[in-house]
Image 1 (cartoon, rainbow, N blue to C red):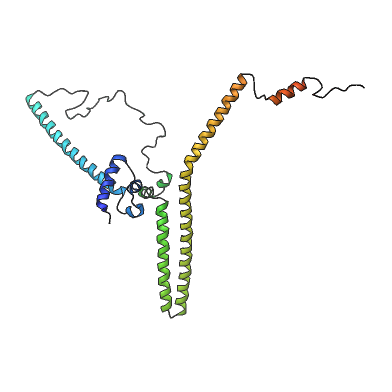
Image 2: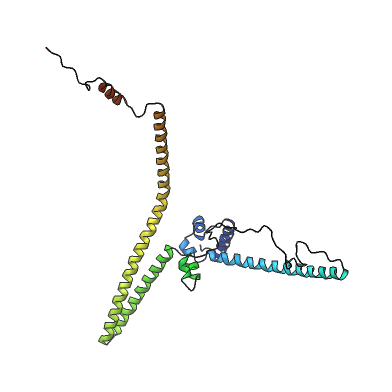
Length: 272
């Protein structure tokens, strides 16, 4: 049964607004193949709809502001004509703006962010050296899976090109033309080999990343266990030292007792 992608997209938008879940995680929860669903289930669609709703909300607020200004202007006009205009408050005029000479806020907030805060920074030093910084916004949404798809698409393109070159070689009548087609075939085969090597490298890297994700929890648990055991041994050693036992053992006590005999533990010789 074919999936109703429109309905699924609406469900994803609702879940994305509530929890901020990504498209890949949502597809895994719904039992959908992300590689097939990603053409229909996209965060960018959700972002566009959210932006559209935000724009509508801004228009509504703008209309309300215009109405309030009109009402305020009418009220001010009536007050001036009747001679009952209210005095300015806090150095503001009838429209709420500061008049000339007003000192403003006596206790302004000078530093809202800590020194070195980069909350508003979108990209780093690389983006500053490109004319179009929007490229980095698109690149930030890409991953190794995208590069793997690109390499596979290029490999398929190379195969199609080789097929066309073979057909042209069969129809070629001149020697120079056949030589040129043969060189093109060689270059295309080399490009195909490079793409195959790149596909193998990316696949291996993705496998290593998945293994690292699994091993990360094990490493953290092992490290915590080792730290706990080390702390326990240190506490036990401190306890023995306070009790005056130190690291003595029955054997070490026997050796110390023999050494105090004066003969280093050797039996004395007797005269016959």
